[in-house]
Image: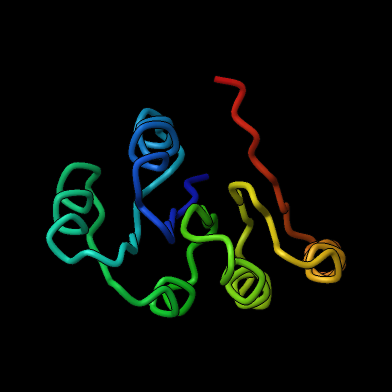
Length: 125
């Protein structure tokens, strides 16, 4: 089975770690990538083979990838994760996972209720 990949926040860490790791897998298919800077977004899209790219994170959720990487700024992650879980995505989220503990508990409950994986990354560089 192949999982489609969406990325919100294709910045330095996503480009250095997440995207090469997923590109090396036969069971992950790039679907849509998001980054605020349009010129750099196009570079990431072309380099990693995403057919779609956007500067609006909501378009990533609307595309309904199977798996979503949340690696952008921390403040909007709670809203992004809620939307992604409600859309049926599995999530890999970078730290900080949230600003408020209530948001973390909400995400956990939503993931469990939806039968989705919510994974938090912590790189040991």
